[in-house]
Image 1 (cartoon, rainbow, N blue to C red):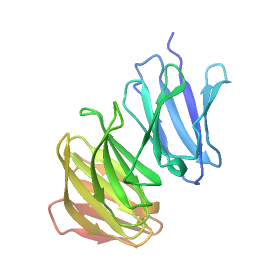
Image 2: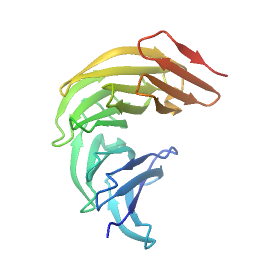
Image 3: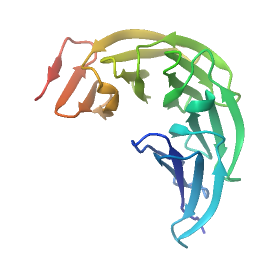
Image 4: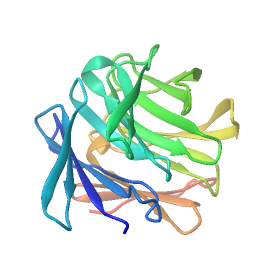
Length: 225
């Protein structure tokens, strides 16, 4: 019988993040990050028991899943990505994100097995091979990165920062990202949540009392009070 396991990954920040593996996988998992800690707690919600506490070796930030059996988590204080095997419930690998540092944003192209980790110190985005941790490309971004999302339908990667910018990159190939444009929003937009609309032609950043809506390929940028 398939069993649902819940991962609670304790992070240093007050913004929870969630990652799921493939629901058809016997090791179906959910990772949720909540403040203060450096562990991932695996819970069986059917039996209501703690299955295991995984030592991540440092304070985690945003996780993402490959849809199979691996969850990747930014370990901000160690400048690395932890690869977590949800079948064995162990950290199978740790990969440095240099030349980036303090990684917090995480996205993934599952088809091409590429991770997109965005760091704050230094302010760099890296494209990483999800199977071996090899850094394929690195690009500069603005200060205070937080949200990071990849849209498979368009091949676009969106990264928002509290400097008030959204960096939009296109994945030209499995080894190359090209910056399409940088959209100016508002300072502290890093606290927003990136929401995909339609087929990826539009992205919305929600921040406190305003919203910024941008249509890729047009000049339409709106602020809603």
